[in-house]
Image (cartoon, rainbow, N blue to C red):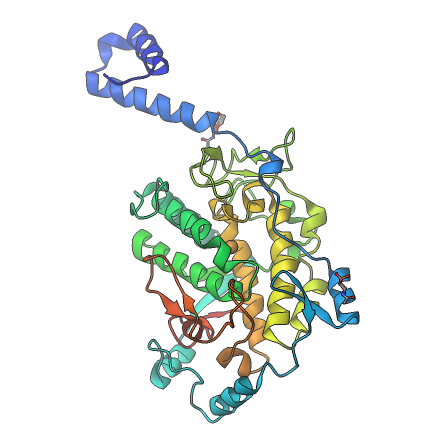
Length: 395
Ligand SMILES: *[C@@H]1O[C@H](CO)[C@@H](O)[C@H](O)[C@H]1NC(C)=O
Ligand SMILES: *[C@@H]1O[C@H](CO)[C@@H](O)[C@H](O)[C@H]1NC(C)=O
Ligand SMILES: [Cu+2]
């Protein structure tokens, strides 16, 4: 026998109460349930100092940068890029206007693009998503949490945690630089495919139009005992463990930060932060004419504030995938990116900016998904209707 003292105490108690009516197998099943319950109940909440939050920039600061002719790029204030992204981008755009894609993705073809445009997978806003769609979504996520891990992402202890670990591992490459929106677009799509392929999820996908809830996220009915669980404030300088909803009492084994220790799924809402996820900020970012400026505004603006506003696990940039609200937040980020792209075909066929090592972001820049999906290139995921993916938002 390899039971701990606590288990032996349980054995003792159970035997004393019910020895005559339980077989050994039933008894060990009961012990296991009891132990799982104890392990679940003791997982600690993250202390607030462990979740320092995403880097954010206020709207006032962005406007100050406008006034002094700079923008926040690659961790510092740099001169604004010229309005047209670059000469090569302009010539690419011309080619695109002549009907040929600027980047011939190995995943795309004119026929495929046509077929996709005629019949794209739709993503609907949570408020249009029926109760049964909502339940199917949370059941799909729970299904991933109940499946064994692939084994390629230690210390992930279930299939869902593979995704947390993947994001944690790649974090330095995919945040605080212009690759951010493209990588997270493919990551969100990868999650959707896992729900479909591994958990029989068969509904249209979903997005959250977060600006409708700016300043009062906690009242949004996604954060309810019926679905994602409540969105409480902090408790005694720590996040509050989520004890209701589909993900009640979840223990996470990946994070916080670059480390890995058991902690509960916790939240710590800060509505002064969520207030920044509003239409004014969104419109301001949408008014940016170059990709690097839009990206910077969107990443350090509403993206950062949404993470920090939900708080705790979501406020730990590296481990934030541990809160399923991550996907809903990133669906907002991805949707507004697509809205920005819809203004001009050039925004779906060309790219500019820089990646983590300071080198240029190009259509050939790799977008790596750790073996969960094929590695692709920025050009493969720039257009949601042409390339690897085929989906459209119900705007
Ligand atoms: C421009 O404004 C930003 C935001 O206030 C500031 O951080 C930066 O130092 C300013 N740059 C210059 C060149 O004045
Ligand atoms: C979560 O844990 C709490 C505290 O142990 C318990 O009261 C509650 O019933 C649990 N909720 C669920 C849904 O398991
Ligand atoms: Cu991220």
